[in-house]
Length: 101
Image (cartoon, rainbow, N blue to C red; front, side):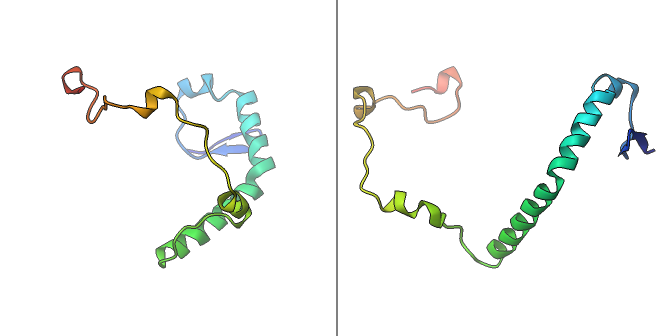
């Protein structure tokens, strides 16, 4: 059964406990977010669908052209701290006490 609240409708069944969370103010806030961002959300979802179709067709993901200068740059990370230079203990399995090496 659909429930209408201030221009916003819910098509899922509503239980009395939902009223504690879905107050009029909360519903209006979410509706306001929807009105503000729905066009952009739909645009991004359409781009995502296009990319998915390309990937399904065999295309591979690649780096952004805008970050090419960073990848081509002459940069280095800071030296590793001593405790990372000589690692002898590794956790290789579940975190059960008996499984820690």
